[in-house]
Image (cartoon, rainbow, N blue to C red; front, side, top):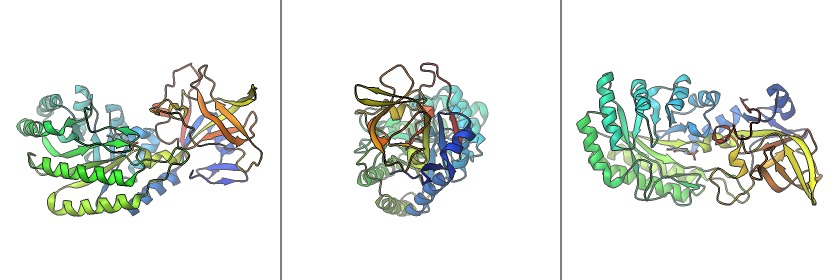
Length: 401
Ligand SMILES: *Cc1c(COP(=O)(O)O)cnc(C)c1O
């Protein structure tokens, strides 16, 4: 399932042998992200999606400045969710016209920064309209806004649902006509709609259905808009396979469906660019987390490999970042890729809690102290989504290779 090659029994990351990369980094644990794999993933998407659909990177998946800078050169825009992320996206040289800012709790100071930066703000409350009217007149810059809609449907089969039913994100469809009227009265620069139904979906038919319904909904709402729709963000939610038995998302039907919608938009919303925003699908499979075996113990017949990395740096792989039933991320012994001699082992981190588990009773090559354990599918929601301060261990390093 993983994208990385190996050579002479060693995993290659960015074309480099893992042991040499570890020496270059100078410590374990570390995260490494592979430029060639990032570039290849964007290439696959460009092939599958219609050329008129814009591809945005949702940088919360991996906000490392070097990654954002690299992605900024490959995609059409960056989606941010805080003023901190906005700074990284601007520093990366992203054209502000192609940055959009979403989030259910934007502070007035953040709204002010976003207006000054001339980025698109995805409005998620009536209060934001009032705040933006004041900021716009103070700065002499009309805020560029899109409306984030909480739709009246869900993205079926999603790991995380972010639309449908009661939600803190966006505004309910029923409230949108009122909001659009307020935007018009406040003199904000209305640009379009943002719909985001959910994340981590591996079912093309569900993604297509959500994108179709989102398009129809936007078309209906556009009738009440103060000006023509220029921006239509249909969301994303493309998942990656993490666990045994999960099938890779087939992009072909998703691309075909978007091509039909893009075709319709040419006449129905002639000024609109269709945008999709992806996080983990762009970066998740291009990253590994690497930790070194500190100890090898046997407890009542069960082998434990104790490594120097764990939950504090990779909460998701430990199973504590939104999973309902804990499953193992794909794990390998990166220094023994060809080993025939296997055993059942449990890989745990150094933290004094049973939650610090990276692999539970997995079949792995027999590993010894000093070996390098690799967790695949670690390019998204890894370092930045983990409680680094928990238990006071040294910081990890991230490299782009
Ligand atoms: C989190 C988020 C994304 C990215 O989700 P992935 O599952 O990483 O693709 C995109 N858009 C919005 C609005 C989000 O909140």
